[in-house]
Length: 581
Image 1 (cartoon, rainbow, N blue to C red):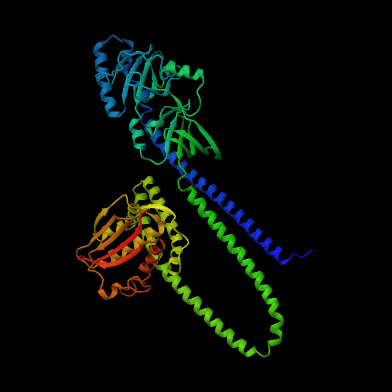
Image 2: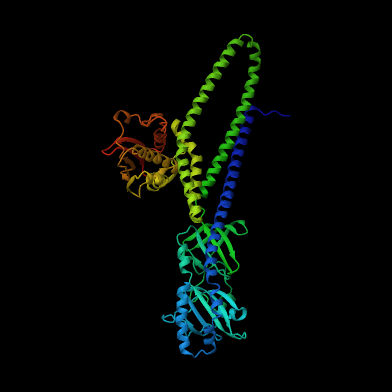
């Protein structure tokens, strides 16, 4: 077997490490991407089911109204004698009262020719009375199938609505007419505005009839042929609406009801996670388009983690190989000197083991203390969030529980990231300046975590915030600094009758300045110069390890800024200064 020369052996080793690094980065990115899409697909499916339930609840609430009213004897009497004006007026008033009580939009009665004899909106300018709706499918389908459901834009009012119809028959089974209830879904659609993602409700023609984004309404999700367009014009389903196509290109199919696609919407081409849910009873399809925000960060994190793991394993292997070589070289020398240095070797080994053990214990103590201090804050917030979730579950508010679970998930991710903050205490962190941040947004996140404590301790919060102040940095690390400053301020005011917390954010030339001032009485002059030293604290024993400000100081220093402490008339003032983005 040929033996490689040392130079070629080194080159081969380097190439193998680089190839493994590239492969691990690629596999890590693929896994992160698939994992992120799977998670969002599950979330979107749950969100679609909630939307579908709200639609079914509304429709089922009125589904039996036309069928029950079709049994009314006065309605049958009018259809037998349509010229009875007194009976017409009485039924107009009665339908008006019933419509108001039921909460529907319009109740009206059609004869066998499709002419509206009476209606609940008989007083309005848009009264249905006297109009003929024989061309409407909800009238024709009711004659054929006893009842029908149909969505269309109102011919008289121009307002879209969902029509529920049922035939009226005489006691001998003879057809007399059709009773119709119209439901305008505009209020339901308004309730969806502001919800995350783009919600589209498409009918059997795959035309968007409802949406939480008005600009997406009445767009065709697939091309309409000439026969379909002619049919829609004949029944005036969408009135005068022009049906523009919604072009899309599929990037990747995730499952039968989900895909990653590029959609040319009203706001321009964008990539979305496109999730679908069928509503066969109504003949509708719900579509939810979610933007892949944060996907790139997730993929980057997984790739970095995979690269780190592979690099660690590669260097560990190299270390073990080199160690084996060294052991072989030292074997001969050890045999010759073993007897002479046996006693010294024994003493040296004991000393070395003692030093290694002491070093390990010291490092373990520092890590344990830092982790206990840093993780205590998100653990406290997590405990308060879980208590809130229990109350929300008891009160039957699943949407609020879902939002709370997302915040709990964020806290758990923050706890996983907190251990990396200890690096800033010993050496410069490799994180660097990674993203543009709004100081106001980071402050708001920190205040949300402390809101329960501030309410319980009756702290008055005063804010003077310049929303345009932006810096470059890492959101988690910067939020941790602000949380430390706010926690210290709240701790200083515990025993005070007046608790005022003043937070300012302002631009100062090329810097952004954040200051936290409390009414806790201030810091002793002899302690001002030591507040950023590790393990120095002015708190009672057992209430602090003295690492919070030291770690915060290291984080701010790595971000290219400064952190200072001073006193004011009220109490202590901590000033954070960072270069403006």
